[in-house]
Length: 89
Image (cartoon, rainbow, N blue to C red):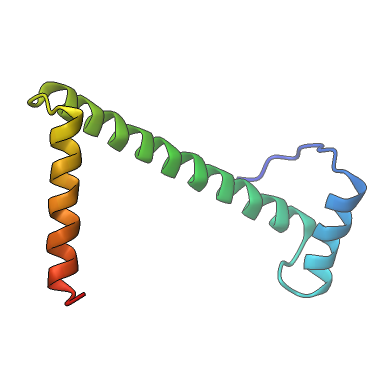
C-alpha cells in the first residue's frame, strides 16, 4: 500500500533525485526517496546490531577476570610476535 506524503527537499537534493530519474536509475522521484528511506532503515538496523554486539562484548569483559594494563600490553606484545613469526617477518 502506498501513502501520499508531502516532503520538502533542498534544490540540490531535488536536482540530484531528478538526475537519478533522468539517468534511468529510478523510475520516479518517489522511487528515489523510497530507496533512500530503505537505506536509512538498513543503516539504523546495522547500527543497532553493532551497538548490541558491543554492549554484549563489554558486559562479557566486565564479568570476566581482571587484567592489569601491563598484563594486557604483554599479551598484545606476544600476539604481535606470534603473528609476525607466523607471517615469516
